[in-house]
Image (cartoon, rainbow, N blue to C red):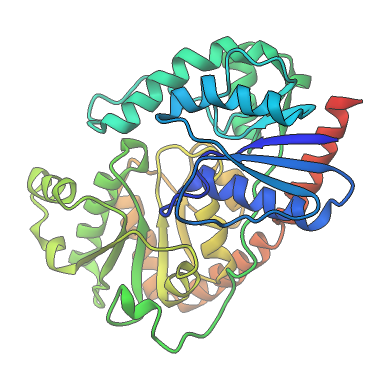
Length: 372
């Protein structure tokens, strides 16, 4: 088979969720499948994280803004490469493309009411673009892939699709996320000492950053230890607005904001953390959950959307709309050593059920079924 994979953003320096998913899928297919030919369509960028091989060909496609690249330039490149199947991996696809299509639809948040507090121009334009494109391409897709049973039920119901058209394939996590010793050079780039609380948040309201910070302020009031909070990839002005609005000045001197943390540093950051907060209001999967669990770091996560499914029945599940609930679980981890140890051991066992190798095997089976 000649299989095309759209991976427009994987060469950019600061990668995020969907970028990592398709990158790991590509690398695993390149390593394990020597029967088929893969053509990976990317935009130029500084991080050339995939190289050509006998079974994989990287095709750099220049084309300006993402809608122009996807809707005009990508279909031309696909036709020129002569692929038999095109897998678009980031929620959207060309409206006019004669090549048989598979779409990874990570979520359908774009069909849900938009939070009026979201002021991000980039996020709002992306939301509008998906609302315009997805209804036009969904019926054309031979199969739609999503990443959790929660999201599959959501897609089938909201888009009124037959169950057989939507395949669920779990994500994995990278094998370097495991308990590991660090000589201090990595995590001290971000913090001065071990034992901090770690939170990956951003300005998207679904990440629940505001309630999580309120919960942290309550934790500081009740804790005998008062651990600092490491917050990655968050805008300083956004943080200041939350602190002023909620009168939680107590948190300001305790928060460390190093900016973007590169993926290769994250295992050491997780390992040096006391606990990881993943208290989103909604997630379609949640790779950071697995990464922290695989490192043996206890995770406090939400009881909503896909998070109970991925974290499993033994996880610490909280109501993400309750700052008191989040706070009390942090206090329990701090005061109950047996509970802390149980959560660390449980997380490693749970994470071991997921792998990129398994993801790639299922993906290859789906490709074959679409061309039979």
